[in-house]
Length: 150
Image (cartoon, rainbow, N blue to C red):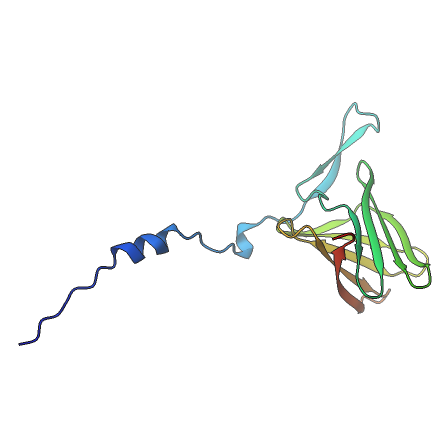
């Protein structure tokens, strides 16, 4: 007569329960950035649930970009070709979209009508993605950039 040996699952059940569930899109909020009047130096303050915490210079094989906070509710983006020194854009804007896990800072270049979109993730601050759209809304550039100096 064969006997069945019970398998203890308690240890594996505890290990499975201890894992955290992966984040899902509905676990995050949409980015909201706006200004409210107050008595500060500018007469308003910025309210932004997707703050720019990754400010700095980033590079890839063909381009470099710098994204910074210029002043309250105004961000600055420079994109250039380091091999020629040609400045591709030097834009200031306050247009933030995306979700709190992946904000997107958008800049409109008033000279050529291109829209530059810089997106990042807070848990990976050494990388940003740059997308460039023409004035018709067609994306013609999409590349990953690494923080300079790493």
